[in-house]
Image (tube, rainbow, N blue to C red; front, side, top):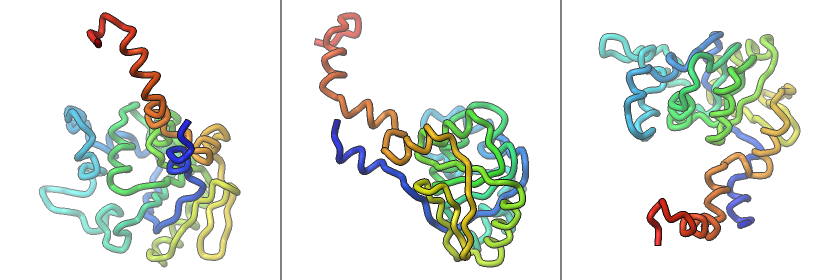
Length: 206
């Protein structure tokens, strides 16, 4: 196994400014409207993140967190309970990832959504509701201040505070050892893949 590739994929912490969106039960149709599922690639998904909330009658809503200039380039999304509920569509985490989200702090997640996020390298962690409220207040008051999500010690750090978070241990270890990206791990064994392909006559490889 190529150690260099593994090291590139290690995620021990995520740091950046925040985007506060603490409503509960934000579903995958909210995150990516269903009409965009017909696209054959994920290339444009970042443009569609929360599009039906962000744009009304052809005009951007400037107060929406994903439009608000105070939170521009924010990479840590703060959400409420049951975040990512609804369908299992991969388009929702793809939209967030391509928008620039690298971590989500929520009260709880829909599990399939959390797994889809992890497969893209988006770190999802949970903290109690009261901590979500405090973090949202911090972001709104000091939007340029950095937040750190440390997987090494399971802490969210901001404004001199440290808050413990929860994450599935297997998922945390996958981020820490670089094995969260299954496709990259598979591609590391390119010779083995080619050998198997060559042994399958029905695929037509020679």
